[in-house]
Length: 94
Image (cartoon, rainbow, N blue to C red; front, side, top):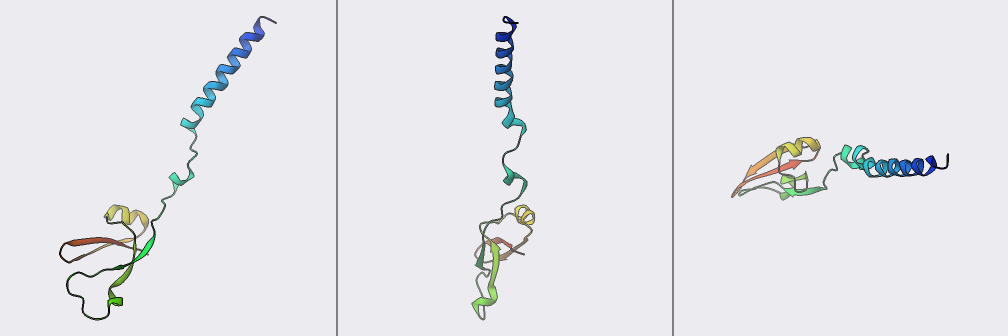
């Protein structure tokens, strides 16, 4: 019994150490990975070269810094664009 006790203790330490080291690989501690964190919604002046009338009619709510169509759809927005000096893409917030 006395000779097997050190063996059992060493085996227990090895098992606990292995479990401690392998645990993070199999358990997700990041709950934000399951949800998409939406960027801020900001006012955006969606007009290019010629914008007759009041500026307010061209101001829309968009997701900040989102210009990719796929990312926009993943956020639940509507991809849009306008032509000015260049084509400007933005994501309308719903």
